[in-house]
Length: 105
Image 1 (cartoon, helix red, strand yellow):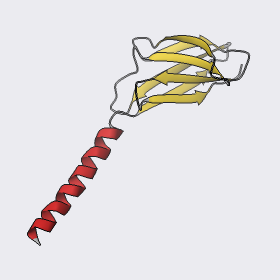
Image 2: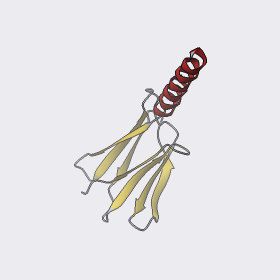
Image 3: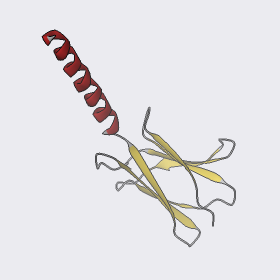
Image 4: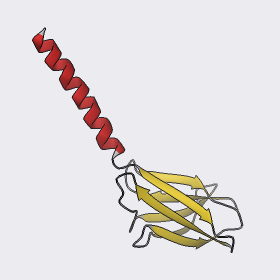
């Protein structure tokens, strides 16, 4: 019984640690229309670190890259809003990509 309790405690601890680790690096993105033909995208991880230096892309609905650059030192990027429907993507590495439909003009 004591050994089983120990295994059960270890299992719960292991599951808790894995879920905490995976959540600790969740990338969030905000895309705001500046109402001047441009938009700004901001990226931040759930642990408070910015997306500074990460790859930033705009893609059309077929996956064609319209713009590719790096996020600035503050984890932001301002871009001219395309005329066509598009997606905003921040590439934070495996398991840390975020993709959102971009705002219209």
